[in-house]
Image (tube, rainbow over all chains, first blue to last red):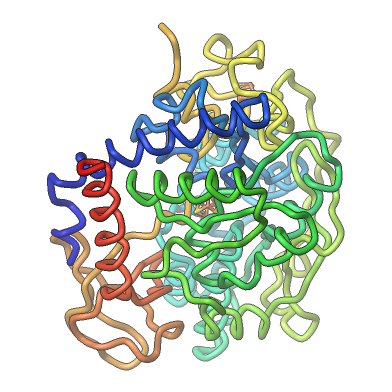
Length: 369
Length: 75
Ligand code: SF4
Ligand code: SF4
């Protein structure tokens, strides 16, 4: 099947879909007197839209606004600082997803801590961190658990493994985020004018299409769940335009091969087994109540925030405007540091570090030389 | 960060499976897709299979796009 998906007829299909999208976008402009704006919630979409050239090809036709969908970009500075200062204790191994290594804390990065001799390891899966704990019974292994609904069940899977194997030197410092509360917040604040959402395929495969119904029923906006290939995204944007033109608020699943109506029941079961809703601080936005998940009381023994204390001071202020970028208020080039003081080699903010950050995507694919 | 990659299931053993991801093999957890069978394609994220790809739907959307192209050409 996958070779079918790769065949050369694809580029022909993409071209036709692109024309179709442009035509519908022009119709929208004629009808409503402005360019339609859609927000892609997810960082993988931001990257994929830039890399495939779709974002550029639609300039002047459709405004695609990057949303708050990269877990690295939305983690607030105090949390980043706390995670970095965790490396200071003795006999500790800090395990993390690779994206976190270069995120600038107020004082240094995880990468610098590693260079200074701290034991910081990049793992592909949190379960690998449990294995490391098994191999180093006299050290404390702490996993930095960031992520959205796609990743939260995977964090649960690691805790499950540690529980079953009775591993006592494994814990997690959780800072997870949920998509629904942040979308509600953005819509509630009404700072950006939106005509619809391109919904993240990966989060949706866990949460299901029905989870996003509220966008249509409560906010009157269309939304389409999309995959990550050029064809998927063009098809989803086409559906969005058709709904927006007809002023029809529906939540459509355009990625049925992967996303089920109710999502993945097992994944939802396990995330709710270990974790419960908690308030979370979002970069540039502040604390949003019940917008993340952390350990339930009965699993305190796996909760690194209970096991270890860290001290952080007031985070250092920079001119980075990531907070506005992730709310869709400005495009990266509107930040004075973009491409000058702040580049992927020397990033000032997380949006330039993360492989899915809006600033990084812009820098790599959208810059006018 | 949740770059889900498609992988083909080669062997199942208990709560994990050996999968092929673009030519290289790795072990992934399958507690979220207990119904998975050998030969299925799954989406893997951070070491866990998160969804079984429904080939029927994948083919259908391709069909739908093809029809659109044909309609454009004829119209
Ligand atoms: S796929 Fe997951 S990690 Fe990646 S941007 Fe979307 S929500 Fe974030
Ligand atoms: S360009 Fe750099 S400094 Fe400016 S908002 Fe993006 S990450 Fe922050």
